[in-house]
Length: 438
Ligand code: ADP
Image (tube, rainbow, N blue to C red):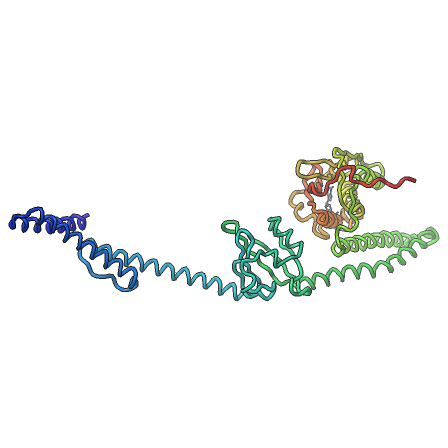
């Protein structure tokens, strides 16, 4: 404020001095006009100096000036200096980010909100075959054309990664993961998981081969044991007891091998080959009859079906999954319990449920129940003939049908196993081809 008033005084003094000189010369108006003209010229000169400094030497020291103009020059100079420092810092940070992305062995690709390529590191160039000159500004799906990638990209559900062969080398397996950030922009990362994939493949093949190789010796053993069992009454009682145990353990091993083979098949086989629209009511009725014969009258079983729509899936796989749930209910719910097999619809999903009012499960075990060989009570599970693979099989079958398993249970309040299918898996009853007339 003081600067302002000093400046005004200075200008007023100049105008007053010029007017006084005019009055002495008997031309006040001319003196006043001359005073104003001097003030105007002084301001124009400073403006010119400011303009020249800003356009030609803005990095140099500011021109010296008195009063308000001097203050203005100093402030502008300081402001420019801090701006330059901030810009330099931003440039350095950006450079460091680019350098660290360059040093990464994983691919990093930045996409704009339309999905066009903005920037990528050299690993992305190597793994995905992106070329700077041609590909900048192109849509990502023009370069990664695998339909699975296009579906993944358009679906916008990026919680799970996607595994695909590299577009430039079929033998290289890549894991893609997209992250949304900023104004609907996307960051695509791709990781080379060829080694991990090979190890996983070897593990699967190993389990499948061992299970397969065990099948024949077990069948031979079971066959001989059955023959000996026919003449068990002629054997000494000590040997007879051993024979019974050998038979029970052989059949347990056979169930285990069969479940392991089924799991490997679910992991290896291509999905969707035997999928048809299934009549769920008759599927549940068949499973109820099988479960009833396992229960041998110890439980009350019933089927509830309130959705006429069909479920598109593999009959063999779904039957095996729902049977596992129903047999588990028979094995673990306890005698005298009610077991319900249910097919019901919700607005955005349809559910196959197996519910019992038996002993239930402590919620601490629920997150781990679908792990292979996880049992709540190992002794009890073995005694009831369980292999520890039942719920792992259910989970795999559901994954192959785009479905998920929900488990709701509390000790003493029964258990509910719910398989939730998306509506894309449902078909109207008319979608089933009519059986050929005899
Ligand atoms: P298992 O071959 O041991 O039955 P599963 O994977 O089928 O293996 O089941 C895992 C465990 O879940 C079982 O050991 C059992 O303790 C528990 N379980 C499964 N279904 C039920 C049920 N309906 N009620 C109580 N416990 C259950």
